[in-house]
Image (cartoon, rainbow, N blue to C red):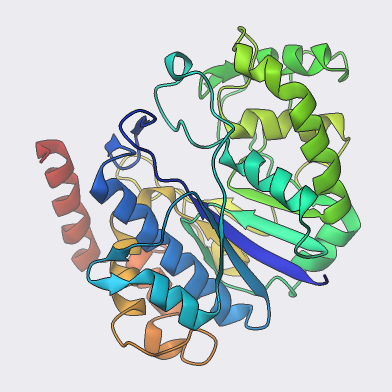
Length: 339
């Protein structure tokens, strides 16, 4: 065991476990919803392998890897050397307590697995709607070693100080934190759940803390975490992990018609997180990445569309071109009209 492992995950919900996914406008058990996330997963791994060619890549999932748009992703991932770990999801809130994003606590199944079955000195687990612009060796690995874990601090510019964040305020988060031995403070920091990046010793500690706290989370009292980032924020605070150490590497970049925060500085980031591009930019990039069978991201990046220029084109950085505007408007209209 050595080096860094780069991972993402996919959970296949069924009718009994499905919840609504607002960013794609449908339930998590819908076949097209799942296809959307599989396209993102392929793009995530391809972009990472283009800049992290000698790094271990791992997919965690509770299902078989399917074919999407006629592409056998299980075969493609095998050719690329991606390891697939079949891992059931056990961390779920009671069905009556959550209406959206019901499978996000899967990250804690992953942390438990990593704690019990180490795969690398450092593990980076990201949401699949992320793109790699630079390799982890370009500063990120060293930062994980120095800090133990990287945390993506989301401040008042993302969520107003007195606002609720996915069903919980910072004051409620602070109350939950106090009840579990945290500091006596009026407000708690909120860290984005799109990135988990930590040394193996930190992963073991956070896994143990999660197992101890989880029964209280499941009880779903008024201050209990409602989504994975609430619980990660609690764990980071209890472990006294430095806030904001991931902010120079990753940013949550919004490309909706109402909220657009892309800027010139994004060019220097290691990772782009693009939640609003799941149904648009990632679909285009997936077509580019899979257009020519037999290519490998580590060797054929340019031919597969794995370049900054193509990422900018497909995601609309820093501003949409006319052709993308037309395509995005079409998607928006179809989502409003429904099936």
